[in-house]
Image (cartoon, rainbow, N blue to C red; front, side, top):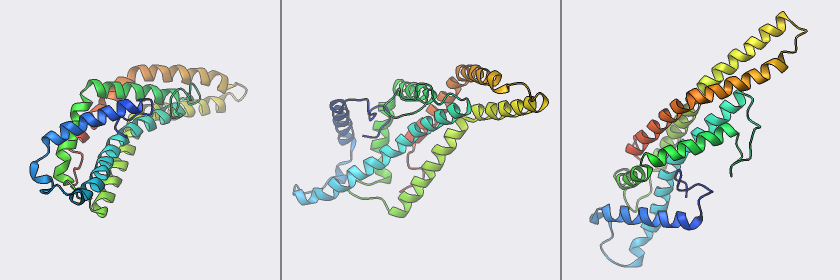
Length: 229
């Protein structure tokens, strides 16, 4: 439901169910036999019916935070470059065009980089930190969640840093020009300039931003629970 690319709102529900079934068969085949209940009574499977969806949702939200970081970086960049209103409703989730471009490009890059393999590996290895049929300790889960949220927020600001720097320099320049020549309408000159500079920055920095983002996603997929739950 919440995995990047596979859980997007634009993906049909039937496709999501088929993908979920495929991941289930992969994980079930690799799951150690000792983690399964010894008897066949339905009551012995109740802890698994409760814990496994919760544990899977925790892992999926960890992946989803990287998508939210990409969206946040796009919103910050768009606000800094005065492009936040252009094609703002192009996607399912309202966001500026810059965020939509980063989101689509990031998801495409992640999928081409073997996201399905990384997700399957993360699901299998997650049983080391989240044993089958057991819910995580709430205090450990809260600490892990706060760390992931802080990391995704820091990643978003890091990705959007070039646009923030240019925005600050742009506003300082306009302030100096307006102070020197009050009769000049600097807004009519500065607005097209910042838009042009923003498009050039997108051309130059989006590949670097996506490279940093995909590297962070791959590091998380390798070890989702750096602090064991």
